[in-house]
Length: 81
Image (cartoon, rainbow, N blue to C red):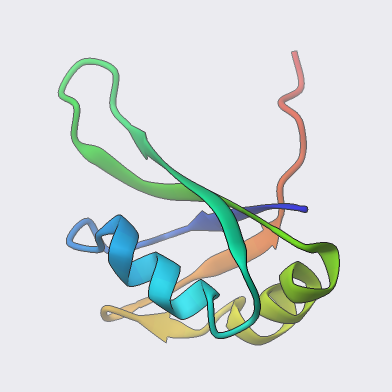
């Protein structure tokens, strides 16, 4: 399952997020979203992991404080065009 993780502090690194997510199961991939013009991290990431692990991570991490901000963690949905 692909998970949307938003409202992340701009200081969060991929290794930081991977460490947190691995508490719930194996992480297949993490993609940090960056601004096209500036290249700065936008506070959004997508994490791919097994369905059961992802469901547990969503249930426990949505709204949890991380680096001083409350994370938004939910199942990623395809963009609507």
